[in-house]
Image (cartoon, rainbow, N blue to C red):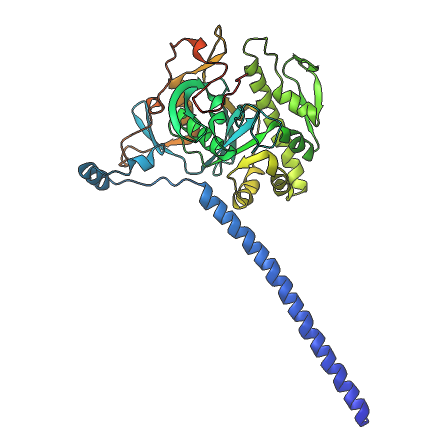
Amino acid sequence: MSLVEKQISEEKKKKKSRLKIIAAAVLGCILLIAAGSGLGFLYLRFQGEKNLKTQVPAVSKEKDEAENTSGSSEKEEQEGLYITYEGKQYQYNSDVINILCLGIDKDIPIEEKRDTGSEGLADAVILASIDTKEDKLNFLAVPRETIVSVKLIDTAGNFVRTENEQITLQYAYGQTAEKSCELMTDVVSNLLFQLPIQRYCAINFQALPALNDAIGGVDLVSIETVHWWNGSFYEGQQMHLEGQSALDYVRQRDETIPKSSMGRLGRQKQYITCYLEQAKEAVGKDLTLPVKLFQSLTENMCTNVTAADITYLVPELLNMDVNMDNISMVPGETITGGEHEEYHVDTESLKQLVVQMFYTEVPAKEPIPEEEGNTQTSQEQPDPQRNPSSTEEETTVEGSQTEDIN
């Protein structure tokens, strides 16, 4: 072999060697990126689970006695984590994650105020409860007319007083959507004996058609007949809800019919069940759909749910079944005859339901903190004997916003 041929052969070998090194480097980068993505996903899931789950601290007898002696106690921090029912102690189930879901009655971006100057009304109040250990998704619906102790806040953001009003009004007293959501979270937690509520998510009704259509619409059979000024649907009617028809189904009611809002609540419960079942199929085909929806709702949603929360929750929710049996309602009765309907809670039945849904019994041998702040009186339970007509059509506080509750 000539000298020239040897040089050419050596150059070819060097070139092949460089190509191998480059290929190995590229493959290494791809593997690192893939590994990084996987680790990033796992990290987000870990953070989401850590941030969402409420830990219930164990309290020793010695520590409890020491706190009682010193006069300083951590029991206030444990409010809602322990509860007594029928002489037995229960502790909050730390595998349960509660998200307060609110439907806000306005057709403008959620941060914009209505003409009345308020943030609007919470026409749908539903607590989603996710049991990650038992793979169960439950809902607890709170009628909008439920009478609770509402905090009245003036336009400067100062607390004025509390009044027994419909729970729907509490949202109107926030200075921002975030403040309104926080007020609603507090009032629902108080109603449920200081139950921990880890997250909230409020959407205005303008967002619902987009959510509905993103999964290809929702199929259901109407459970009641409803007529309103420019439309109607009928009990037993097979419906494929798209766009405005989805909004009409969960929003419209005949206000001339007593207790019509309870019928609407029933339709909202049915819609949630059908939507989630059909959404699971859509997400199974496109795992990025929840994030896309989350990003598209910016103007019409206020939430403290994070990307890490979604990363953890979506895989969990895909394993859960939803049906009407999973949806309960705060027990009570509707009082009519006044200017506005009022829903009065059956406190004892509600406490039983809360214990069943959110708590586990503490074995008698385990020392536990004394119950404090877990009675309905802690939220200034409204007097059910008061004159129903005292709920004003427009609740007014000096220097504050007003809102029509219809």
